[in-house]
Image (cartoon, rainbow, N blue to C red):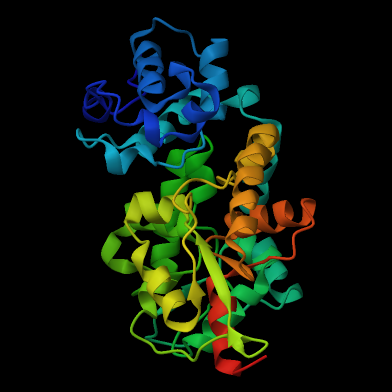
Length: 350
């Protein structure tokens, strides 16, 4: 039987346990199998044939994992857990073993004309230009949050935004189709020559892993040398906090840049769990709604305790998760994307 996992990646784990305190699902359950170390043990059993792909524990843990990669920065052995998880789901989530909602979403984002139509109907950014850095519009963002790309172009008018661009493949790679995910990233890299600027942390990490880090810039990196006016609310500096994008922070190491930007224009407050997953995690909020809501509830409690006007996200999935959670708890705090917040600074007091 062909190998399911990259042997070098699978063998790196030394079972030290440094990953356990960093893992949100281990914190929720206290179950060894729900930790990165435990899941790698399961992967090794699957690879060796000691467990069958239909084993219920494998099925449970493949979906319970957030895929946040918080274990990677703390791992002394350099285990690339995110890559292992993609390979695991590539074997586990085949046919009817893949959650139905995931199957539907993956099919939907394959329809390139649908992205273009959504961009037109939702008035997402569009600007054709030769020899310009390229703004990646994204699949979810184009449909749900078109203001994000419009704000990005307003803040960085030198960017081009090709309305014909397709999906970067992150959704596929994280949900059982790693080969297709890589192929879509390469295609997008061919379609958008030069530097690609993203407003989605998850897409940035995936795209960089395929076409090269040197070609991918997350928006806060791209505008970090720009100067913006203070954002005022009722004559005082806006009080804001930030929710990290897990893949942006743990995969690309980008977390200082958005904080510097926010500190330069607002009264910034750091959440105790800013670096911990909010429970969005791509399709996780749809596949595991109970666990996702539990994580979001704790996050909202911290946001409320911080006494902020707004919480800023750097990923569309996180933005959706935070807005829904704040609405459920009838909070007055607004969730906005970084580009939307920085765009307020160009308008002066409001």
